[in-house]
Length: 413
Image (cartoon, rainbow, N blue to C red; front, side):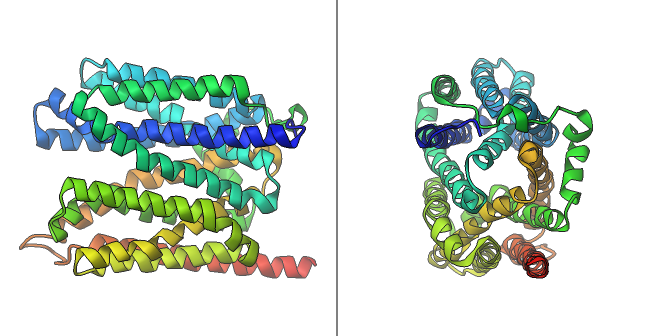
């Protein structure tokens, strides 16, 4: 390992967490104003909604393509240069979007953002490099908590800056990414020793090639399926949450924003505080299965809640699915070598990107046919109930994978 002492390792973990938070804050800042900017260029609210959906799909598609490439590059050249280049690229991209004169330039910005933000794969690989296997769930929980903190702060800050100008959040995001780059250039040590690196190969780096790694072990493939279902369920929030809250409970945008901030806070507490102690007591596999089923209960309660207070209370069990995210990552990293961590995270991110393209379209369509007088399924919470069923299926698969892995470990012992 290229981190020779405790102090260097501690500085590296601090950088990874700060970088993760700054990147997510930078991404979240533009959320409140990007649709407004699109509407200004398109001249139509309805058309802006369609274009914004296309932009989301573009971003997810580029994540799908770029994640395994960036992960494999980090396996050959090390984590540090890939993270720094990606962070600098994000800063440049936000400048591009801040000065974009038309929709085509904005679209180019979203494409570049999809590529450069795929460095999250390297962030996870870096954490795998500098933590022991039994500590990785806690490490990934800290990254998840940093992401959640960014999702809380970003949209709130973006809303304030958007009152000044629709372009102001982009300039601020560029500054934050630039600060992260400079911070890393002076502080971030390399985590992957030269003797543990793997030569870059397009056979492994293309999305389909990267996913072949997931077939190398049955537990790895099963966990990848769980990961896909988890991401698929999670996108019910990005697809219909705002529309559902306004339609069913009459909540204002401000109330929805506060609730989303609460979701981020709960997620931050679960991943940053609970994961370590729970994994220490139960182990990765039991913690993962419990988190998936608890999340399914929470989402189902959201879909059935007859009033806003019950919906808000349902956020508590829902937040516990944050226990599943880092434990899935931890279990998967234990099934590949150190030289394959970047490739693994690239494959994982591609799996999540596929869900990011399909799921919002699916849940948007479900919501459309579940409201109104001519609704096929007249229940506005139908999308949440389906998401709960999908997450419960993920829990069942996770339980089966965990049980099989336990049997194998028992036989080998």
